[in-house]
Image 1 (tube, rainbow, N blue to C red):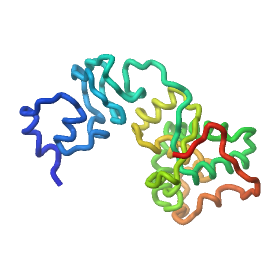
Image 2: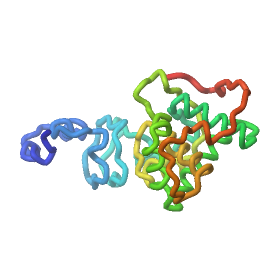
Image 3: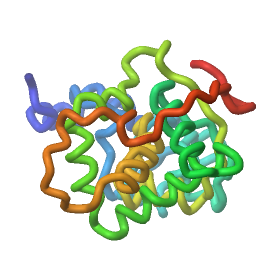
Length: 228
């Protein structure tokens, strides 16, 4: 497979300054190609750069106009993000967290989802994130809770995630625009509630449902939830 550096020689001959088109010309994925880049002074007027990940990139002095379209979390013109957003997660993860909400005696299941977002961010701040993400990736059952390959297994849940939390997850935690960035944050939060940090036990075969007390209560989706 050709590396994008092998095609640098074509850039002086290219007649476009469009970042998406340039990445494609270099056989790179425009969605992630511009992470960690200094884009000061770049002319981005008229460009549609939505769904492109600019994590740790400097856009502060890029030339923008009213037609420039960026994901709000990376747009230097946006001072405050909407606190209510649609979060995509698997139905199995939604069910697991709903059962956890019942076990933990949350009055409203939505409070458990919010609390696990906060917990996941806290785990990152404590430098325990890598331990839990490794535990999740090493367990096929936990990993399946994040599998978004089938649209029929997904739902979109409208949640309150504060501006600073969205920026922390996308930018500081380096998850960018990954579709499952909020789902993995919640799952880390949940697993960290049940498994102690740096526990040396083998958790590769444990099933997620074993972490939660089984109940017979019939679960219904929260209002505002829709399948995607």
